Length: 341
Image (cartoon, rainbow, N blue to C red):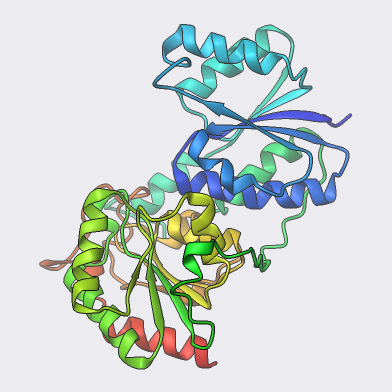
């Protein structure tokens, strides 16, 4: 018998949590009598807006849910939902401790299979096995299937057109093509070089597109502002909008240009096509945005690639990092072809 109320763990990273939302939309569509409790960090709640039968419960790992005692406090909070099962889509120390509390109380636990050995074979230096691995969204889906739920992912983009925030209407030009760029990433080795990205932006603006920059903190805000000083038509959304408002704006884009980062997954959630740039990581590892195409990935073919799942170390193709070998013109031509195709 399948579970009817499920608690779901996925605390981070941002892109991984966004991918969960894509899966849960289809899970509820195909299992409308199931109730879901999503446990993640408070800022990510916006990803789950509009999903039926879903409650969001924030984990606060630096405050009341800190340490073993804090996790037990979180368990007591979650126990009130009287769930039939727990789907651990994270498989880290926190989620395992929480799962243990639930298992002791008699609640069914199912945990994601991350395919660590396959990923190691994909990224090792010698005898690399370069083949597409199971997509992460299918690994999420398998966890629910192991709870006797029927779930067939469509792997198609579903356009979500949300109302624009009021202050975004001031600069939004509905008459021209709009391109979002998420040029930053948690790990610097996944980022296309800043000076080359500036060239990409310049070429896109010269073509007549309206360009929006997304994603980052103070440092990234300053870089984007330096670009804007030279290119007044550029729109810097960093620190100007909430995550929910960013999603609203993304839903109105014609295309997103992103690294292997959360920007790709946010665009996927809104049904927006993404041209993605890959360096030390590779879409074969299973982290391509939901519904996105391998044909829209820009990457250098080299025996050293990929050398990392998370992009936390450089990948040298000769004396240069592989991502630096991609020419700005290659990216711009890909975008033009996609928008004119």
